[in-house]
Image 1 (cartoon, helix red, strand yellow):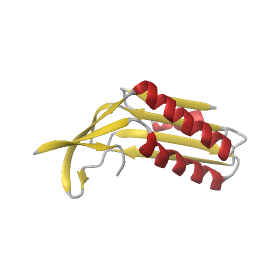
Image 2 (image 1 turned 90 degrees about the horizontal axis):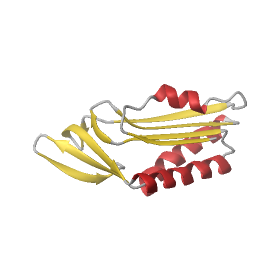
Image 3 (image 1 turned 30 degrees about the horizontal axis):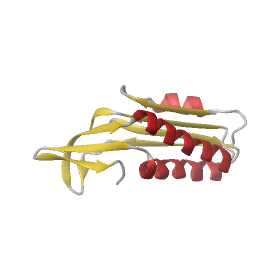
Length: 138
């Protein structure tokens, strides 16, 4: 089962964990991406995320469907935040449950790596002395 969302409100890691829970799963993994306080030693004040929501949801759904098929995932949850986020806030949560732990780890890593490469979500880093748009990956 897939649960894909882009939200303008704070994300709940626990909600995603609960959505991914399945009694038939032997493994579940969760990736929680948060706003860090620096980039390459430069202090960050906050991040702003924008998305082309229809395409972002479509691409995230493709990723989740591939995870579901490739790793026999029981549940794939991908929630991404948009808007202005403070240091420490959650930007993305991915939760995956699979029959076995190795598949859960691989599936979750694939999901976040692919999301950062293919999903139209953009990140602006706000510094004390300016701001810069960057791709939503490190």
